[in-house]
Amino acid sequence: MLAALTTLDETLTNHPRVVVTGVRRDAGMGSCFTRNGRLVWNGSPFVTGHFYGTGDLFSALMTGYLVFGMTFESAVQRAVSGTYEAVSQTAQLASNRRKYGLNLTKTLNAVTKFTLGQKRGEF
Picture (spheres, rainbow, N blue to C red):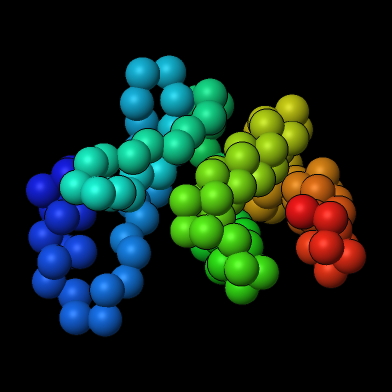
């Protein structure tokens, strides 16, 4: 994975940062990117099951955190944490209710508190 991410970092002309999501490691699930030629993994405990919308949620959270001026690494870490929170909440639902997507109540509440804190300069 390091070779693929390094190639992308070197090949893409406008120097974007690349994140690979859905990476299983040990007993966790997370995301990888490179920093100074080394592979960085941010993850959370693995939750068994299939959860629709995790990629959409991750990208929305990460984009929002970047727009608020967070560093790339902090945005990835918070997006992983927020996605894990939503998956954890959804895992408590009956399997036939999971098909409707993630339970975002707690995650959106945390994002709202963070966003309001940002506007007041509390971060």
